[in-house]
Length: 308
Ligand SMILES: C[C@](O)(CO)[C@H](O)COP(=O)(O)OP(=O)(O)OC[C@H]1O[C@@H](n2ccc(N)nc2=O)[C@H](O)[C@@H]1O
Ligand SMILES: Nc1ncnc2c1ncn2[C@@H]1O[C@H](COP(=O)(O)OP(=O)(O)OP(=O)(O)O)[C@@H](O)[C@H]1O
Image (cartoon, helix red, strand yellow):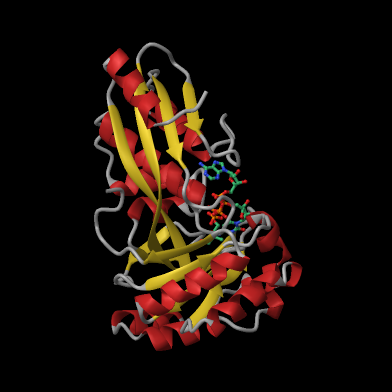
């Protein structure tokens, strides 16, 4: 059966159920530093997170006729059971607030999967935010973020949205001025990367190129894309690059196509390039798409209305 929005509209109408639709946006890391390793295996980080206007559409439909949670999606790369992080987010909130009502969660995937763009985390954030509204739980954003971090380090930022400095394991957030409508090209090579593996392969004693967060924040504030692009750094990049040289090749191509700067996002493998003008970004997108199927032309997103 093809689960699409028409199926959901039909179900909603048939059963007279409550529902909510939200946009679930991806992020990139404009910088990523790892400061140390904690006893629980997680790493202390310091990174600049930036939302981008590449999003999945999430529809959550309340099912009073059953107690199960169902994931509906046409995407073949994500789990349809409790392995799906959106499922786990719904289960968490139901358990915490003793709610037995069933749910259909429809995920229209546009964000590439396992890409370093927080696609899953962003879906979980949308589900937490959506259920807070749907069930009128009146939870403050801080409470939602505390729930979120128990299932994924990137979730608090995805709840908050826009742009922020993330510290701790990613959950200590300070909102900052983000990039306003800056054109970027994203290229996700056809390889899979495990976030846990990348962190575990990082040798903390051998980090060479750490980001200067203050310098980058100043550049972002002053809309100085040149300084930003030339000084971005991600300490996980060398780890992923060592195993997958395609990342270095894609960065080189971005620069050839006149990006001001290019870097890997998160633990990878997606590479992004920052462009001064739409025309240049469009040309780079057209060229890169020929050699790398999952290529996207996007803008940064720095508005308050995260899930709209
Ligand atoms: C690489 C980033 O995406 C950058 O934003 C995040 O740091 C990762 O966030 P995430 O994918 O939401 O991470 P989680 O799903 O919580 O963790 C996956 C695995 O990555 C490692 N991990 C993650 C975050 C962190 N601060 N330190 C870690 O060592 C842990 O081994 C963990 O088991
Ligand atoms: N709703 C979901 N969307 C995407 N991936 C999901 C989802 N639920 C579970 N997954 C699984 O999680 C893994 C990571 O996918 P995801 O797209 O979140 O990676 P990512 O962009 O690298 O995340 P991050 O940047 O937070 O590390 C994949 O193996 C995928 O199958």
